[in-house]
Amino acid sequence: MHNHAPDNYRCPICLAINGVEHEDTWIVQNDIFYRDDLVVGFISSKAIKGNDGHPLILPIQHYENIYDLPTEIGHRVSEIAKQTSIALKETRNADGVTLVQNNEPAGDQHAFHYHLHVIPRFIDDSYHTEGHRASRSNPVDRAAPASALREWFKAHS
Image (cartoon, rainbow, N blue to C red):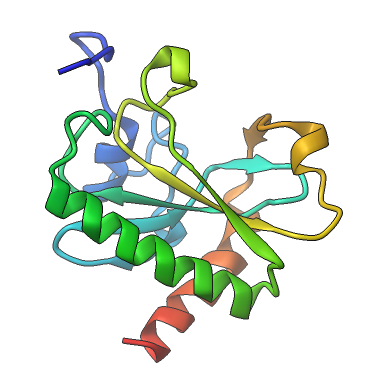
């Protein structure tokens, strides 16, 4: 519909979902904390200062943005985002969560595969003062948040 990925776009998210660990993805398989037939959840390879280790929820099948996303897949993304939000309150003692979903370059979309950010928030965090600036994170730093969420989903399935 309203697509912006170049013709030769090699989707880093699709690569990671299919088990590929490569410099193009920045995602390692250990980042994944949830997977079913429709969606996957993993810790973002980009860290937001003060809100590090935030999860992403995405469809397994490639849809570039919300305009392309089938309603039933959107519902499943929302269900898992809700569960992930509850898990962040319990595993990270988050004071709240912020959900962010970007579409098209003007909407700050950089990876052209629909994804929903579930950002744990803390009283007096720097989210608003630092903005949404993110930097590449180390996979070692993502291991603990991914493990905690994996354990939470196992205990609540």
